[in-house]
Amino acid sequence: MKTAFLFCVILLGCSSNSGGEGSSDRFSLCSKSAGNACSGDGVCLIKEGGDDLTGVFGVSSDDIWIVGRSNRILHWDGFTFSTFEIETDIVLNGIHGIRKDVLYAVGNHQTIVKWDGKEWSIQMSNRSSSDLMAVLVLSEDDVWAVGDDSMIMHYDGHGWKTIQTVPYAPKLRALSGSKGDIWAVGDDGTMLHYENGRWTAITGVTDRHLYAVYAFQKDDVWACGYGGTVLHYDGSSWNKVHSGKTVVLSGIWASAPDQVFMVGDFGTLLRYDGQTFIALQTGTQRWLKQVFGFSSDRIVAVGNNSTIVCYKEAQ
Image 1 (cartoon, rainbow, N blue to C red):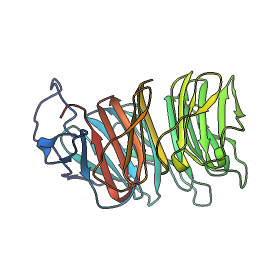
Image 2 (image 1 turned 90 degrees about the vertical axis):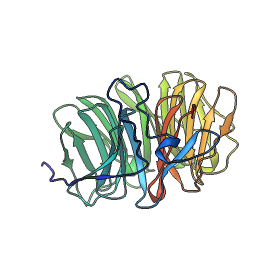
Image 3 (image 1 turned 30 degrees about the vertical axis):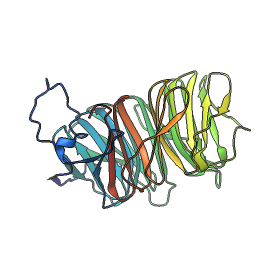
């Protein structure tokens, strides 16, 4: 079913830069000249105030999508934010894609919506079903989603199929990986690994709730969660890494083994330099739920109360 949508333009820290596709800096979202409040660490507070934001994904620095606890999906085009209103009041929890015309967002009550380059359409929604928390798009015919009751769903190009669901089992909150090699994590230290065509539970690593996982390479995978928990997989085993924080860490993005970013409660934004985690000043105490980037100095994080922050090393 195609959605009817309302389009409007809202000014949220927009830049006056009028450069075209050849502009040397299309990451104008993160700029002092746009009137943003920026810290000495290079972090700018773009917006604060409104519905909670839960997920962010970008195809490029001038094509960024944000979802949250409303039926509105925000889009940054390099100059302004626009709002797409989808035909559902379901909370959306995660978003991911591979191209400008292939993106998916998932949410409560097994809701799945798809962007085809022109509009968002509802692929599935069932108010009697469990919530979906995260989605991973590997190709047009290889899309995964996870959620409550350790639910795992897969789209093969023809339709969505539930791979597993275990009543009262821990919630799966995040997944990341590449074709044929995927990690999923969730509550009570739940860790699942998809390899050789099947999912396997990895036990004994932690009993803390895990909120995020990011597979930079097969032998370089990060997970984080409750109480500042940070774990790293080196291709053979998972090991604990000291984060220096005790807050919930709920989002990860990396551009290199020594360029890893994590976000969490109380406005936490951490940067790992290959040796230690460095805390960056964000200018907010809101819970930053998710983070996404395009390079080590082009980072966007979103969170509670419609908070949007960005990091751009050269200010």
